[in-house]
Length: 139
Image 1 (cartoon, rainbow, N blue to C red):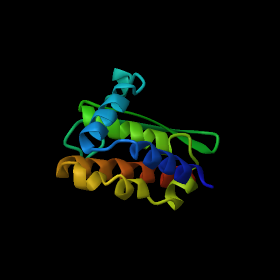
Image 2 (cartoon, rainbow, N blue to C red; image 1 turned 180 degrees about the vertical axis):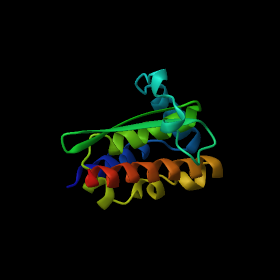
Image 3 (cartoon, one colour; image 1 turned 120 degrees about the vertical axis):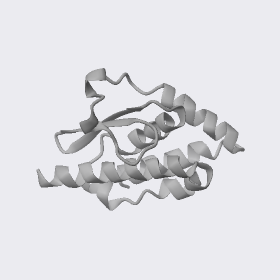
């Protein structure tokens, strides 16, 4: 099984333990609080994700044949969404990222439970990840 799909399935299973969306929101916030430190030197306009209401800084690097992502936001729930994305996509091969649809978004009903601006931000972050993956394949 591909690693991106496997990570998505683990996440979907993890969220199934929560009975309601208030618990899921709290879990997202807790995940966001556990993001690794993000250097202020990387908080530049060049690393900002456009299309997010909150400020989001996203950095990608390629190590061997895999992409590594680091990111942070100034908003609690957005930081939680970043934590989800890093779990699913960081450390994966670019082609695997491009070949695997983001089915977890629908499975977790994120678009129905996030505000429109947060939902747009999630889409912008997913688009950025796919762009990093496409660019990594070209280099």
